[in-house]
Length: 354
Image (cartoon, rainbow, N blue to C red):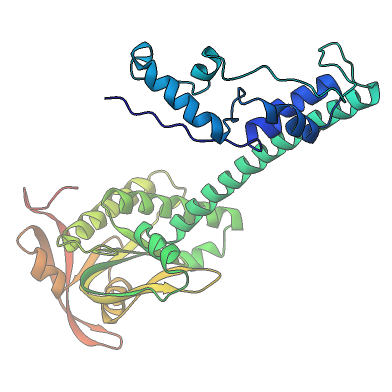
């Protein structure tokens, strides 16, 4: 069974009003509106013109000769023209201008139309360039936002449009890494050299954090802060941070051979709960708060150069997979005596690899 449906068209369609009618008007010296009202309105045989009274005729002839169309009609005007329903367009007798391709437009009108076409092309070109520039600017802003915020947080920030973003995490592992005695050392260096050293060291730390799936939080002077277990929780947060700290230790040892002076780094690690969120409106920062952050910072500041100092909580989680050396209890500012351990390395086959 074949189904046919013809819908009446109108004269004022983009194809008719913007293409066909102006083309005829330029040939016979009439306006576009005159062409539509006096010529095209008489003839349903142009694309877009299928008056209501011709729909039924087209449908009847199509159904009657359905075997010839094999159930398909690509052009609803075809049966009308085949069986003489459509007539050739006629020009009213009161129109003095003949329908002829040889009729020429005045030179000034030709020049005007040429200028209009050129302006249209230039406008389209400018729009295309501007659209491309806007797309590139959007990509740059997206990349900049991802440099400041973790990807899931950036998506939430765009979706919530200014709503407060704050989350509680039951267990994360925070790492601080500080370049030992860099402040007095930088006083004897040129500003460019200071920035070169920090950029070189922190770029290495960035690569290590990315490789282990950790989140860089910020740098504070010559101190670097990263965390495992957020913004998406992961049960192996202490393990991957321990691996990252050992990689940092190896990287610094390698960098010492390439620098004109030795660089030492103190690393501190602690595991616990934190609150994380975005602060700021014009300059965003994703930051952490809580005693876990303070303890990790104290593990670093009370640590030993070129060593990784961990809290009891870290050791309790990783003792069966890593080797630790006890330092006994150390007097931590603001917290009193706390047990501290130095991370020596991973046990054979103990550490997870990322």
